Image 1 (tube, rainbow, N blue to C red):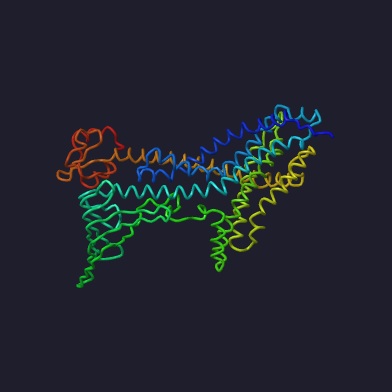
Image 2 (image 1 turned 90 degrees about the horizontal axis):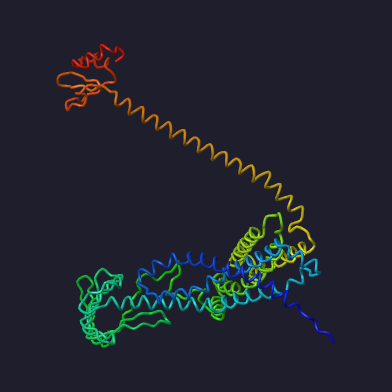
Length: 484
């Protein structure tokens, strides 16, 4: 009985070449995604006064959600960059010369892609919903702690919106004594509640904060009527103050992203009478299964894209990979929208992008294995003609228009400067005249800017015609220069 000996040295070598750029791309992409996600969090962090341990907890809850997209991009980029380096260094050529085909190089890539897709699937199905729930509970708890800190002895607390709370004493167990509450919610006149004791309770699982009062009276005033109600126990619901939203997500509401797979199916079943609402939960359910498989397909597609490099050729793998990646998520979003609008069936519509890209990956891999270009000549020539006929002239025309606009703007700016200079120069050459003694002065005269010189003339001739006479100094200047 013969055993098939696997070339573990080759497999480990190829896997190592893929993992190094994968981790590098993962760190870079995750840093970018983290900064984008951090911006809407800063307002929450500053308003709630989150300390470092709570911020680390919040960061760890957001971590799985960002990984769902980062892993796909990093997996594809790692395969492309790994095979690009092997191609540029002629190692792929050497392996083929030794009789090792492209198909024999597939197992380590499939293994790495399967591990990445498995991690992505685990995050999608298990950790992302758990992280969403934990983040909502953490934000709720922090908001509740902010309320607790705001309620102090012998002070009116206005941190609860339309509720004003006054507590006479607060013991070590957060029990209140001597409570006064003014409730202005949806009212013109407040409801005044006074109680001997009270306490604030919070149910994190149900996202509810309640004030429980004991032995007190409730005073309600409506126009001229006054109503007093005595109670032994009274509950008062407290609305959470903002921020209860993070990047558009309400932390007090269990969203689709925070539901488990079982909860999504239950929610869809309960809304069966409303197909458009029910389908939203089913698309979320299918999406968590579709995206990890798409991650696997895109990673395998990176093999033929990485082989497009070579000595003397530009490495086109990364731009092509980016284009395929964007096209995949555009098609996925488009198909998801059609499913939610009940245009396509659920399973077929959600898995259609994966089917298309799986077929595309097989065709591209087969063409590259046969030493053919990725795209057939018809498609390549078509795109080349489109670029030559439409895109290139458009870019050239756009460049010319931009140059013309810049040149026009420069000319306009220069003309405006010249006009301003001429206006200022002409303004400086105006004749100043005194309306009281009807004497005018030229710019060279020391009395040119006298306090009584409130009239101006364009030149000396106009001033003479209107009956004004020059001062002795200006008269000498006019005799010397007849043009004035």
